[in-house]
Image (cartoon, rainbow, N blue to C red; front, side, top):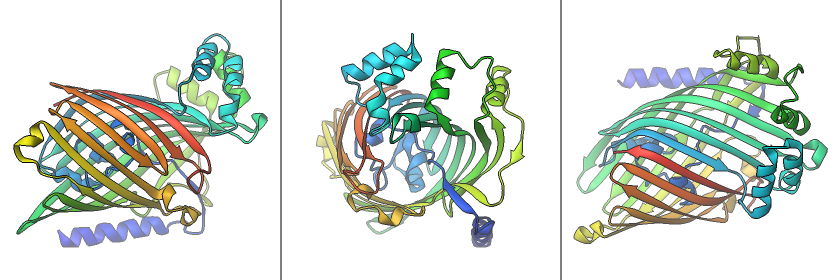
Length: 389
């Protein structure tokens, strides 16, 4: 076992060393905007459990409770749905150009976008197995004619294992997983081309916007130490960075392939002088979960915090607040869950309802898209409907 781990470690180092001098283009992480997690400030490291362990600390696979998610459906929007936003979205159904014009202040300010995910999986008894697909679309530009829309569709499998080690009153959990992923990425779609596509005006038009599609293999590792009501966790996500082996096509070729019920054929490989990579991130978390005995069946609180830092170039300039996530949850009768937190300096809140095997979660969140809290806030609403046992 030790020899296999050493071989795996050297393999990862060797992969990360390939084209070490190449320019690194950061890829967005594989992270659905979970209503449960974002309501609690994006903190889910030392307190992780269930389906969203796939996106936090793999040591959580060794949790006391098992969770089987038959299906999770989760849409989100990167904006607060005030009347102006709702009116602009409604207008897009009839006149996309007019609807986008109504979103101009958002697109040239904090940005605007939407996404969604669906997935299923099992977490428990030291095992984590899941399949998740997500799509994410986000547009922003300093001025109207400079707005670009960035979109990606990612499908990933997560397979991992965690082992609990008990030493007296202390429990040490050690876990890891691997995530093979297939991603289609449209990194630079001008707002005028995007509006033309929505209106159907692109049917007879060749769109030469580049589309990248390919596979990547991510590795995550983590540990959690529990002592009574206290827990501390450390997780390394996308160990050594996750590079996608992209081929290129045009947007028209992508649309034609999807309409034919297939994926685009492999085109020209992205050159060795560029690496499209999800940067490795390190997370350190703390949690306090008081044991209230029989009372915990009526009310069950937990508070926690997580400090996260990415290893992408320039991330060292991020302020402390932009890297901090903290939150709390209070469960009543194991049915109603009230949540609140601070995500990168912005308040978050949400509610969850668990009825037999049905989960409904809703959350409001703010996130920071600049290097320090208060630089460029983007608000959002996310919700989840899941069949879960």
